[in-house]
Length: 437
Image 1 (cartoon, helix red, strand yellow):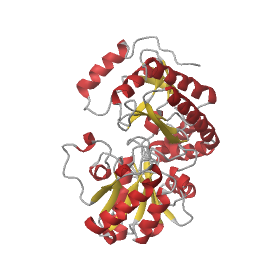
Image 2 (cartoon, one colour; image 1 turned 120 degrees about the vertical axis):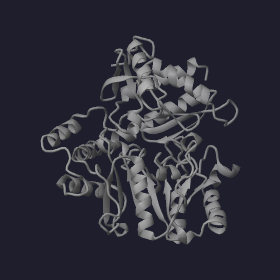
Image 3 (tube, rainbow, N blue to C red; image 1 turned 90 degrees about the horizontal axis):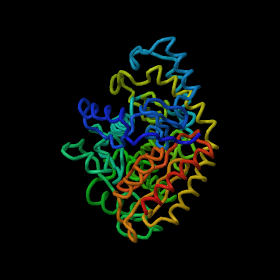
Image 4 (cartoon, rainbow, N blue to C red; image 1 turned 90 degrees about the vertical axis):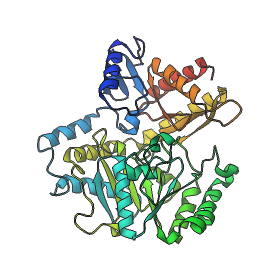
């Protein structure tokens, strides 16, 4: 099967829905003029009957592919029992079952506990509260380029684009941002081989000596691969060096795996590629294959320990738990495919970059990769070309999403086949060539 686009994009039915959307729904983040009617596996059909190959996975949510039969079966079985019974006031056996599986697959050979949330932002908010509670400290470190969500606590950690923060001051106090070790656009203008040491030295020599006493910092929040910030992959040595610095001062490491986790990089969690064990892992997006859910998994000694210190209504909803258990089962069988398709995707991106004047960098791990468009001969972001390539690809039947200031991300469902990946990358290569990029 191949993409099939029979109308202009958006088509006539899609245009009417988009007009009504603008009339009745709050302005948010919609930029791609696609109105989906149904989806199956790696394919999606819009309301005008056009068929698309999905390289967006619902923004990294549909790792198991759209409507995976094992997930649907789990949902149907749970719907036959009950849908909700106040998630944190009563006991559900399915919550315990899922918590055991999350404890098993997350890094760290020590006792852990789980708190269920409803989104990535809420997971990061819960981690902020947990680490303040357990340490008695009030400050946080976060990274420039980070995206941890848009609610006020999570937004205080976020530093991806100014539009996220504009007109929302004041934020939650106590967050200090430091550069992320980007090997392509390096902070401080250092050589890529020196970027990890430069960032660690900045934290040690500037932040901890001039701005914040390290013994008042509760945690550092970090994405192992920055997501909305542009799919930036740090050098291999960065997280081990950061972990040593944090341990020296008794600071916890919170690992935001909302976009990079649940098998996306060929391991359960992206932090595993760096040989570091975090104290808290934040999850959401792909954890339940499209059913809204999140969780934090943390060292058991960090637990609140007091009834009512933190809670919510819908966390650990039984439908979400059922979907998550099935999702874990499915992803466990897909990790080999992710690694193989990831290597295939890397080859495609490198070959396309070789022929391109405006792709300055390709990067990523597994099925979490990106192509970054630049002004030719520089590293200056080229958003205009990025946007035109995205639309060319969509009109040819390939769904892609932007990230960062000038990158396109490639995050197809983990079920994608070799042939389907080739089809998508052929379309992307055509879009780049036709744009003269």
